[in-house]
Image 1 (tube, one colour):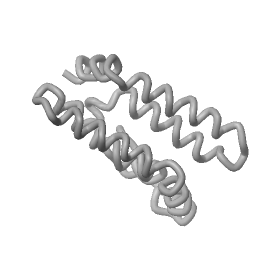
Image 2 (cartoon, one colour):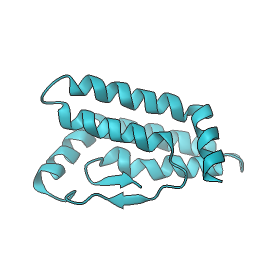
Image 3 (cartoon, one colour):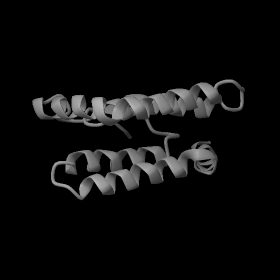
Image 4 (cartoon, helix red, strand yellow):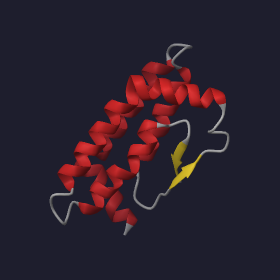
Length: 122
């Protein structure tokens, strides 16, 4: 079931979202200051490609001082906008019964989009 869900997810919006995360991550990796944020965006691209069958996990070492600082900076600069896109996409998909599993995947991606240095999808 997760294979079919991931294929349909990719066809109807998952692939462009993952490409956006990946390109943004590559652009951020071009600078030394943006390197940790670029790596986080590339991890988000991987999580966005195949969300079906994955669960939300806390990263080991994700509660440290540096990751907390990076999470706050990410939240202020990028995370709130990305989370709003996942919220609006999830609410739009939740209107129909067919869209409910895809809405659930959008809602599952919200904590990762807000705090990528703390959470990951496995």
